[in-house]
Length: 277
Image (tube, rainbow, N blue to C red):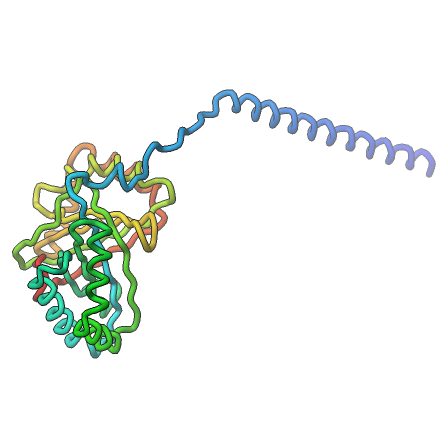
């Protein structure tokens, strides 16, 4: 009896082994067939013929932009704004420096006690290099930097180019509040982003809310900044909602959202010296 039970158990084990082996072989075969079959339809992607900085930026200008984010000690914000305004005024008055402030703001909603400055260098990288050399030899400016450093917690910057299809950021009368929407894109998606937004921007220009659009070149890469102006938060809400009533806006949103790693919004108030009011 024991011998009969042992033979039966061995038979069961052999049967299960053969079934499992058959199933595993079939899965491998199907997987291999599918891989071979799919390989017939794989599309190869040709390498781009030019950098996205050349394909997306404005050809008629050679402007380079710098954006600065300064986190200021809360008790120093008023003194910081006054000092920064004085230095910006002097640089604007001195034609020897090929740079100008496009806009200066304090963050209202977002990171608190933060100053944001957008600079334009007419002439691109050579203008930036020339300006930095002159400032490093300017004793008054070096003293300003020492004084400013006492007021700061941290600071960072980026060098930017402007999208060819966006508005040129020009001085405007206020009062306005500004929103900077920052998008951190997946690497390699900047061209696709530009193709979609070249169409999408047409839905957002009726109320003159579009101020400027930029993408990073040095600093955090694959970063996009869109700058908007509104009369109020209520105006912002109404303007943004009205875009969804236009045919085609939803399609652009649908195709651009998957390109984003993360995003943030800052609501900013212009300083008294800012050309964008």
